[in-house]
Image 1 (cartoon, rainbow, N blue to C red):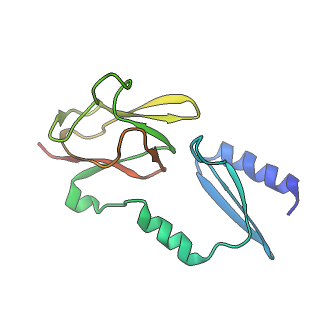
Image 2: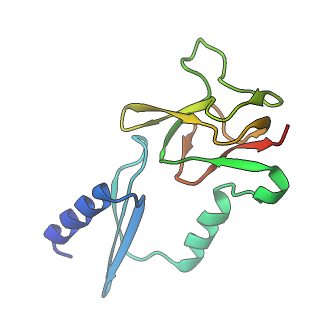
Amino acid sequence: MDIRKVKKLIEMLEQSGVSEIEIHEGEESVRISRQSSIAPPVQTVVQIPAVATEQAATDTGQVNSESEGHVIKAPMVGIFYAGPSPDKPAFVERGQNVMKGDVLCIIEAMKIMNQIETDFSGVIGKVMVENGEPVEYGQPLFSIREA
């Protein structure tokens, strides 16, 4: 595959809200994905079986939002931080009441700290991510029950 095409794909990915793209051209395949600083941002792959993609979807920890209450999902790829700094307590804990607009956590993406606020008032039912873990776009972070 031509390197100019790969560069163009990278530019398109940066300008869009898409977190990953995979292109197949004959025997060649390229996957470009936005990852945290832990993983390399560009990977070249020979072939990816469909089974691997389905397995990855089940490994992301997706939950049934109907049984868990209102689910707050990661709006971006990054590193999850429960509190404002390592020596400070978490913004929220299980069983805590929250109001719409309260800060739930921080997601660090590209060295920028993004405060994640709740769009729902209620009680924190579950915190689904550990402090310092990488998160994917759309990954469930919290469940909130009505108070």
